Image (cartoon, rainbow, N blue to C red; front, top):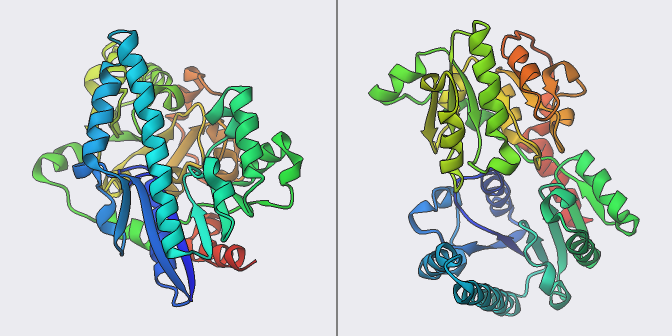
Length: 378
C-alpha cells in the first residue's frame, strides 16, 4: 500500500476547499493508498467543509494561534512596533508550521506528497524521500505580482516531480515563465460532481428564503475580495440593465474581508434596493437552479468551477474574459464574454437568452479521477 500526504490550507468555504474534498474522498476510496490529510489552518466554527472529508484531519495551526495572529494583524497599523511584532510572529509561525509538517513527514514516511495549496515550496528540498506533486490554482504572475517573487517561486517549482495546473491556459502561461518545466508541468481540470450538484439543487428553502427565491434574479457567487472579483463593474452593469428595463434583482452569495467595500459599492447604486447580499451559503445550488442567469465578473481567476456548476444546472451564463478559465469552459464562445471592466457590455449580456453546448462532460469527476491516477502512477 502506497502512502500519500495530502496537504492544503483550510476547510473553510471556498473553491479550492470544495475541490479538495472530491480529491481526498476519491483517494480514500482507493484500496492501494493510505492517505493522511494535513490542513494548515484550524478556523474553528468556520471549518464548514470539514465534515465532508471522510477521514481524520491533522491541523498544523490551532484555532487559538489563528485568533492570536488575526488580532495582531488588525492592530498592526497602530505604530511601527505593532508592525514589527506582527511580522516577527508571522515568520515564527511559518517556521513552526514547517517544523510540524516535517515531523509528520518523517514519522509517516509517505511515498507521495500532494501539495495542494503550494505551501511547501520553501521546504521542498527536505522532502527528498517522496514523489512530490504541487497544484497551481491561479496565474503565477497575478498571484505573486513582483518579478522577484515570481522568479523565486518558479525556481522552487522546478524541484517538484510534477507541477499540476488546473487548466491548459494556466499551463501555457507557466511555461512562458520557465521552459525548464516543460517535462514536469501538466494540467488537470477540477473534478465536478454532477450528481451531487443536481441533488443539492433540489434542497428546500426556508420560509424566509422561499420568498426571495421566487423572485426573478441574477446570481453571482464570489468571495468578497474586491481586487479579483470586481463587484464595482457588476453593480454598474446591473444599474444600467435596470435603466434599460431588466425586471429582476441581483443576488450575491458570499462573504469575506472586503464586505465593507462591497457594501460601499452597493450604496452607490441607483437600484441598490434590488441588490441583496445573501451571505455564505453551504449549499448555493438550490439558489443557482432558481436563478434567471449566472454572472462571473472577475478580473482574474484560477479556474472558475462555479461556471461549470451553473452549466450542470442548465443556466444561461456569461463571464468576463479574464485569465484563466472562462475561454476554456465556454469552448471559444466569445459572444458570452465581455472585456474586464466593460460594464456596458455586461449590461447588454444580462438580456441574452443564448445557450450553447459547452461539452461539460470534460469536467465530470470520473474523467478527472482517471487522469489523476495516471499522474500519480507515472
